[in-house]
Length: 396
Image 1 (tube, helix red, strand yellow):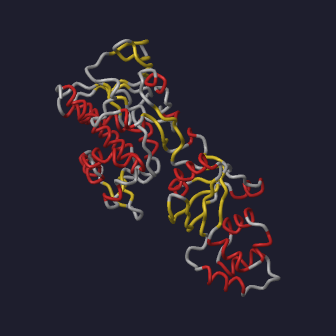
Image 2 (cartoon, rainbow, N blue to C red; image 1 turned 60 degrees about the horizontal axis):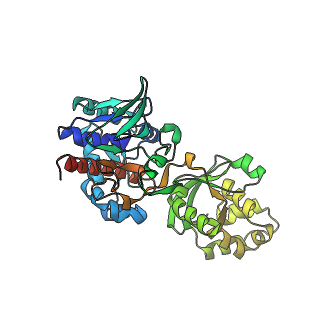
């Protein structure tokens, strides 16, 4: 296994359970660093929504990933975690978390199991590409070439490169004829042209209890005003659609309902009742129940004239558009789109042009929203690739 993240470790577990000798080569000083980073906010391990809906969350890649997901469903993920001593619970949003709200206990138990099954984990072993019929590594003892009976690449995509997913592997596979689609940020924030005054006052402030709409759909939630623009879970739910719109049309907007509990008719009536001589802040607070960052956002984005008319203001409150400039850099994104085209692998996750070499996880061209989907698919594709390796080694 080349790559000691969730996909690589799952493949190592499957193969070592079947009695195969497995070595995991990891470039970083410790394994599964992105797994641990995700655990800082509770480790959203999977999602408890209806599985038929869950399986559609992977966009254009949903059908291609379906067999791997069918074989390792969210229920299987929870059972696997329980087998490692980590009980899980379903949060109010349907997201599934360890009861300990940490990744480290689960990872420690997982690594202990792998060690007990004979898996060798070699850290600070960075893959440098191919060397003839072998794989070249930079190690603490210098360069060395290994020639396994079969290999799995599970090196991640291009997000969070400081954790090891730096996409350095792209030119080596491209030189072997593997088609690789350009990496793009996914589950990312976006730049917005805030005024300096707004940025200084409200960067870091959460915008709560709103409904956001885009080409991705209409979702309730919250997000954060950042110094650069907007970020947070509600933005990530729309990120793929907004990114694609920016790439296609050069412009995109996230549309907000700032008062989801009130109809436009009610807002119009309540705003019309306010004293026209009162300040905008007072009229907005008394007529719409809005203040703080929501009121400031209206001042930032809406000219004064529409704010003075109750009907225009009500319409704006129900459909305020935030114009976006660009996605934040991919190094900041939670995950990435792009990678090895799914048409480049067979049904067992083996590269068609490189027999005996399998791939799994975020190296492949798929994306999903946050909510446990990313980790589940990494585990599922790692498991599917391991089963493919078993078949390959057996001559199937």
